Amino acid sequence: MPGLAEKLGTLYDYLLPYRRRLIQAVVLAVVVTLIGLLPPLVIKVIVDHLLVGGITWLFWPMVIALAAVPIINQLVGKAFRLLTQNTAAKLTFDVRFGLYRHVTALPLGYFDKHSTGMVLERLMGDVNKFQQLVTGQVLTLATDVVMATFSIYVMLAINWHLALVLLAVVPLYVLNHRFFVRRIRASNEQFRAKMDDVSGHLEERLTGTALVKSYGMERTETRNFTVETHAALQHSSRARGLMVAFSNTAELVHWAGYRGIFLLGCYLVIDGGMSYGDVLAFTSYAMFLLGPAVRFSQLVNQIEQTMVSVRRVKELLGEQPEPDRGWVVNHPDASFRGRVQLDKVSFAYEPDNPVLKEVSLDVPAGKTVALVGRTGCGKTTLTSLLYRFYRPTHGRILLDGHDIAELDLGTLRKQLAVVPQDAVLFEGTAAENIAYGRSNATREQIVAAAKLAEIHDVLENLPNGYDTPLGQAGAKLSGGQKQRLVIARAVLVDPVVLILDEATSSLDTESERLIQRALRKVMRNRTCFVIAHRLSTIQHADLIVVMDEGHILETGTHAELLARPDSHYGNMYRRQFARIGRDKEQAAAVA
Image (cartoon, rainbow, N blue to C red; front, top):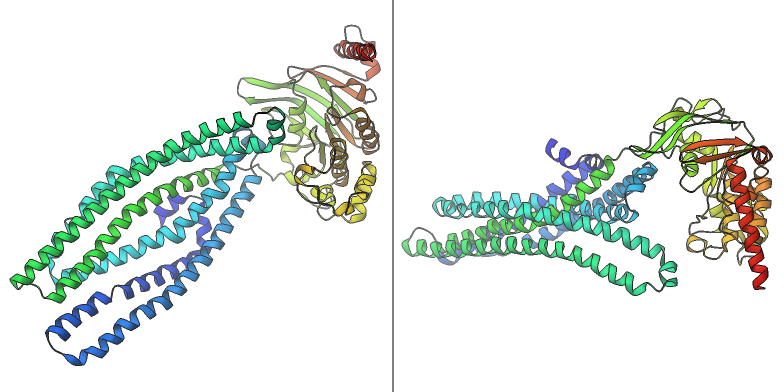
């Protein structure tokens, strides 16, 4: 099946384990079809030999034959339906699971360029279309081919002249197919692409429901959604219009051919060229031939829609995952202390627009380095490179002397943990969220991490303690509590390198105080990268790195940098504290 393998690409591999089941399904479908094709021959015998010929002993055998056909058909059909439904369910699971596993292995850069809604559309809707193709449309096509072939054979045996007249109608179906199919495919592709956009925007708006409501934008968003779905509807309407025209033309050819054959058969009966039974059987088999031709036109519509989905799933499976194997693999003897070195590292999200430019830095194990600078200067990008979410365009990053590009990805990321500015929690219990990065952690280890992060007392007072569901995105916790729970999650994996990305920037003073106290305990004996705009939070860092436009401008301790004349850090520090002083004076004046 090289042609099918080429069209399905990677998806063909998912069919191989089900090859035997699919062959069995095709065989059962053929048997069901052939049994269903027998009644016209039985009726021909009844009319020509029993009614006209007077051979009365044929009565009971014909009655038994007519009664047995539907019973056998139902029994075989039941086995066929059970087999196809079970195969379809298992195949859908395998493809969706494989696609999800592939999606989770894609580099972060892929998600920078594609919406979550688009990925969801492929995981859910497009996978279902693929299952329909394999266990529905292909089997229907196979049975229709058998039906048409058997019908042609019988009609040629009954009256080959009339059969050739009927076969002359078939090219009209081919012309109809060639005219419409490309137009239908193009419209379906435009519709699916538009639905990707709709799904992406819908996912964003539903995620940001609180923001939409807080600004009173419900009507605006509803209007925008209406405009987007209307644009998709236009593409869908064009596709449906083409499909209706395609099917109507096929049905017109079908009924014209059938009625013409019936009238010609009646004429041949009058002329003595055919018997009554011949005409009844021939017109029945003409329906069996023209019926698949009509279904073929409808099936082509469905297959064209499905092949669009297959192409989209195949494209997603064709995306290259993160390379995850290196020279240093994940094994019990692998140990790291946390020394991080950047050797002339450059990086650009887009060509000719570098975010980091030949950055070199040496951070000893167990030391805290603070990254400061204007928004967009490359601080977060630098820590993303540590995780190998992206690869440097030039230079290299070393962890304890190992180039991280040569490390097993699982080994590398087990050495790191991040506390982001926006706490990310999943639906589940408090314990499950803390243990997210270490699913085999004991309850004692989870509690110890929570105590270190100053969140234990809060969790103990929840209705079910650590087993309390937190709701979507941790809705039952305050912002500061969420952040401390994320700190507990980071502590539990026991990283050698801890990244704090604006971990306290959006919190109130009391929450910040609690988190700073938790962080001081967590940061002991770990290499820490702290990204901060509040310079008051990094005064005790072992090294402060001032960045601007992808370059390192200066490095040193808080005291060293303040002591330097014309220090960038010193200027930033004085401006920030001058602004804080003015804010306090204004607040006092208002009070």
